Image: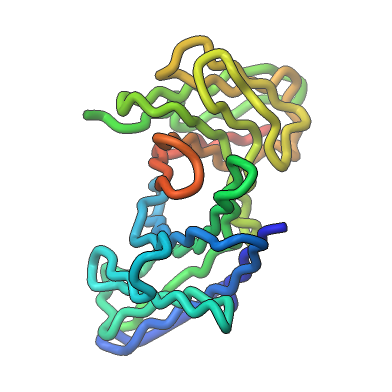
Length: 114
Length: 113
């Protein structure tokens, strides 16, 4: 069965510092992996997705994520945090085999300090 | 294009009352979903639909019903609201499952007293 674990419900960084949000998954078949961002009082928006092409995926707003099969990880990074990055981030895994199934992680709230 | 819209944005109900949440999408997507979001629990799938006239149960379907009479609309009903259904409800749609991203509405904040 699929599952997604996001390590750390809250992450705090200083403006200009590296952002690292961790996501580990389990899937019995090659997965599709997604990162979504949710700004306050809004719905989720796609940041980036991995679909078995390049293992390093670049998304919007300077974010990127690297698929590491050996570590079953898909961590999200951004070299330099900006105040506008403060939001909640969700990792999700989708299982192509057997039809529909997308599982979302519990989310990580990112705080950016001035 | 409006994308995915939800009606209403906020609602307060008393225990035992009923209501319907409406979701509409203008992207001609086949798949539509209803989630609830609770603190520390991420998004949990309530029901979903893979096409007009079809519905299926998700992870937490109890206490909810859905209908997809038209491709662009997906309705979520609460027949007898309970305080445990206090949550933020999100509708989403996608072209298909798996590889395709989901597009989310702005959410409905429901409080059941």
